[in-house]
Length: 260
Length: 149
Image 1 (cartoon, each protein chain N blue to C red):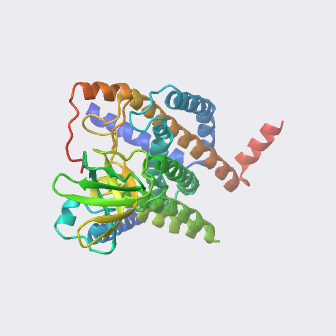
Image 2: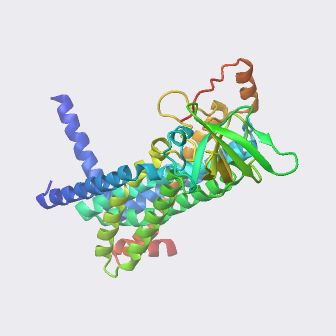
């Protein structure tokens, strides 16, 4: 009986957390207090990770120093993929529960995800020139990553194309959900087809084919870029919340409080 | 869950599952065309068109790389450890191009089965290590040289 009761308590508290997430003032307040410590930590973590990876790690035995772009390229690519799932999940919640905050999360995620995708593509091209001998090649990994960029930009454009914002969210959510099929394709493209892009160096099972002295700063950077993504999301959502709730009492009180 | 929400959830799942299935089938249908290059074994089996632009990818055979003394013309062989394809190329090679390493050559197969390449790209593998580690590995001769694909 005890476990059953505790499961019930967990379920109800999760449900109330989910409900609170739907409340703009609560989300605004909690994100503000999270950002107060997460933002400085992220900046320091990024600085430490970049210095570690770019300055203090040994060069690669074949690529020399050019491999160091991995410390930006791989974290940006991983977060670009993860962000898409977050956007699609927010889209699904917005479709099913008509939660306004899910709409805002989806809308905020699209340009941020597009930026990380763009960063991954650009750093990949910069690395590709000295390594492969070309900036760009239409292989499965690179092309599917470009499709991801267009999906993100498509969500941004589709949202702006509608005057009726409720219809806009619905259309964007469907586009985001259809696009999720691309994520496993990007991830597995290097294994399914012959591509110029090498297979993953970090492996879920078995040893990674990247030396541990290079792997630790990479893990550090991946965590830092995830934190950066979280900061960007919260900052962007807070702006959207203020914009959409501008006429409500709590925002007016907030404005008068900060003025006095 | 409210029945309307349940219905919407079903629609969401339907959209995801069926669009994935549709695109998955499309990918399956196009699977041969998504490959960036032919492995030498498929060329040996006559699957690659002669006289059309194709790419061949594999490992550069050790000892096969020959440079012309008076021009940029080079010849080498690409292998996937089942078959090999001779390649001729005139131009500048990427820095990481080397014997025993992966490469992708784009060009046309001539009647003799030689790829006349117009572009040669180095294919980097997924191994990253500092030079000292690579030297230590080589010293202990534990570096297995097997087919990459």
